[in-house]
Image 1 (tube, rainbow, N blue to C red):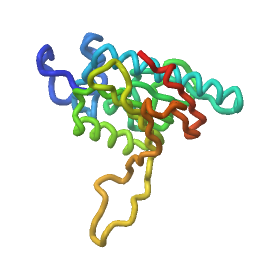
Image 2 (image 1 turned 45 degrees about the horizontal axis):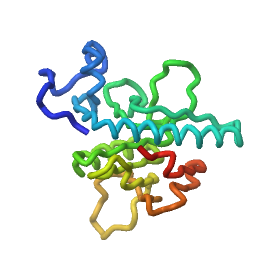
Image 3 (image 1 turned 180 degrees about the vertical axis):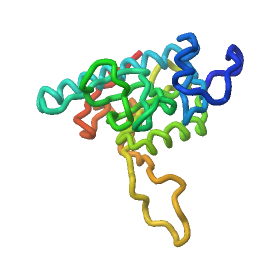
Length: 217
């Protein structure tokens, strides 16, 4: 998720969106801003890009089917597109590997967390659990209803596991005096591996059916 220090330009710890826009594109595209803090992204191996694209293509097929059955719904699917977490401003954003968001009223609008139905991350073997949980927590705190996580195999160009998570905003019962660290969290709602011969199947947030043949490298 984060680039190694080698090759990074010397930037301040905090920046605004306006300052980020002044950087060369090849630098700016590797940065997220977390409440203005500069966070470097890791561009994974080619498999990362391949499976991000194939998941997005599969989701686009499913959303098109949903929209044909229910024209009042309108969803778009993209890869590596910034999602701005606040209602205003742009100095707090994440860049999921793939996402589903509502059709916006005008072109070139910023995509807000409130516009976003689902975000997904393709995890390379080098991703640490700390990095993964930190980003997942920010998605949850922003109120994005669904989060998907795709783990890649360590010794083959293949997907190892796909997991879907739904947002839980009411914490479960805890012992007296104990309070949750975060007001919202994701709960596991589906898990699939190649052992599931029917592929990925789930009815939420819309009917999703993805055969493994559609995801093979």
